[in-house]
Image 1 (cartoon, rainbow, N blue to C red):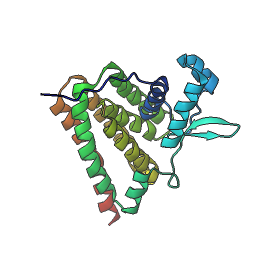
Image 2 (image 1 turned 60 degrees about the horizontal axis):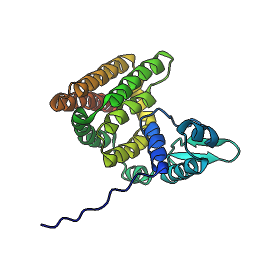
Image 3 (image 1 turned 90 degrees about the vertical axis):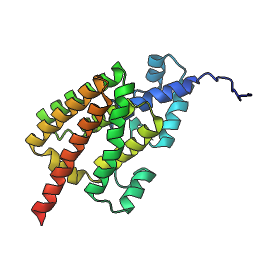
Image 4 (image 1 turned 45 degrees about the vertical axis):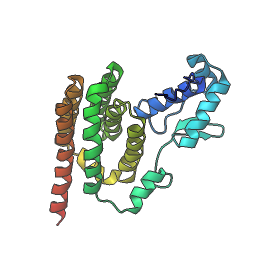
Length: 239
């Protein structure tokens, strides 16, 4: 039997730079509005040419992950309703309810947690733990902790090592946390909710760390069900 085999192509240096910066954004280590190091410093830190950095930056601009401001520098893009991704705009036109969005999360993220339990490496577990610590710090300083929450769920998604899953979830969270943040604020304003969410995140991380697909799936399902029940209760209160 003849099999078509293609030669392995070495990965371009600019692709590696692109992947590294994109990963920092997806994991929430580079946050919306945060300024990137100047090209010269990035080139020195990564030990590559400025042309290579420029190529990678341009691709990130085209993807809508970063924005270049004349005379100010390069920044991680802050999303709002005007510059949402095509997926975010499409979801917005569907007039989706909170329940609709959480049902989609249930399917995407329970599956992601189960897959992550089999593929997560030490860096992924560390990223999850870091996001949980960040959430505690944000709450302690009087902020809502939504960005750290996003960082945790993106860390779980990134641990799937599935580029399509990562891309879909990044677009989804851009819409979820920037398109309907007023609704989500209600959830994070109650300290009891925050404590429970942090505990749930801890259970998800420990299940992934223990390599149990069933436990990881169940822990994520319990977490999203908790959020769904909260919003159902809010809807009943308003009736």
